[in-house]
Length: 384
Ligand code: MG
Image (tube, rainbow, N blue to C red; front, top):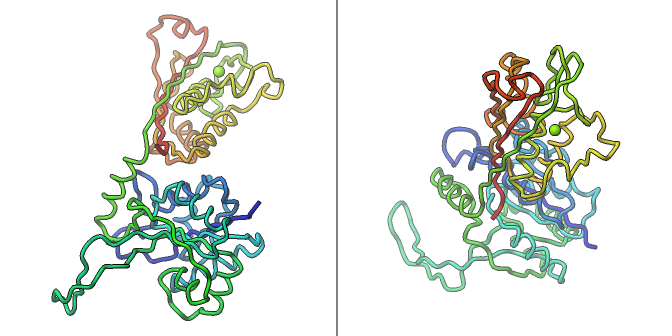
């Protein structure tokens, strides 16, 4: 099977988009643009290696954006796009892929279908592949701010990324024409005499550049994804002990909780909520209590699994809300630690994690102190 790598070019200064953080790190629906682009390629089943190329000054921003993706460290690009790509191509030498896709990180809306079509063309024998869209607007030249002559649009197309290449050939073209300062890689493939094939580009695959592009990209993204919620509920009985685990935090108490695993009702309810949002069964199906290997297991393993399933579907965790129902122990003093713990397991910002607590006013099994309950709601976004 062909080995396919992808390079995400994110090494621009990103200042054309106006003040604030560089554009590739600005949020679209709550997530940095770069993270959206990483999601698209990390979720592409045929792409086995993903190399991100960044600016040195953006190292911390990139680590944040790529958190929880199993990627090789980002490499530092050069002063031009072309130089950055050349370095990216050199960085994946050890993988020696058959084909490489080169994509501008500022196009976070590329569809899985377009990635697949570019790969299919390469496998079918093309040396270079470019997604093209015809120009449909009339064209006019502006000179010194004045509206000038009409430019015929016949035969003109807009070139997008991802562009796909025979790895060895595009690498040698980059070495040979290192000073060309091309705005994309197909231009170098052309100079090197590579056989170029076109595939239809996508109108939604916009390059986020100007300040107004962000709102437009968000509207497109909202249309191309669905938001789902799931809920979970869990109960554990008190037994002798000196602490309970709740949301991944050990809380000193004059009793413990009975259960096959660590009996963390908070994380169990949240895991079920995430599985519910995915319509992927429940925690008991994924981690049967009949299996010895889950005895005493840290429940963060269950939650990590659910988060991984969301990621595999190309989705993102938007928010979770956990309510612990008990008279004792008091949750308030541990609430922040619990939020930190859940945010860490899910790889999301703490502002997206809510932990609350309530009593049942002495009523029912929680009121009598026989056990403790937890409920949770998880909200995720999945590609439509
Ligand atoms: Mg449980």
